[in-house]
Image (cartoon, rainbow, N blue to C red; front, side, top):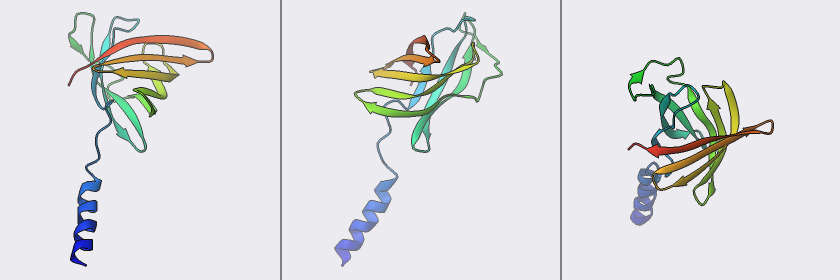
Length: 129
């Protein structure tokens, strides 16, 4: 009986210690149409992953204010296997949400998306942490 109680206790203790998804963390975007880039923090949100704009930078790399700070740029994103993810991605410079395709390879994240047959290559983002 003691053994069973210890097993149940261990399961409860370790349930919250599940391994983080490899996509989680901070990612620096490439410059957008305006020459600005951002720092996107990807973390769990419900059963999916979401990415929030936590900092914005001008073309020279100086941090700037942005109306989009705190906005979820990546939403509804789920792993497909092999470092591939699908979900939604918002493009602040175009004010449009795309169906996203993300491909994780080490510390690089290839980003692209399509909406109504119009596709956009979001370039390769770099891991920052």
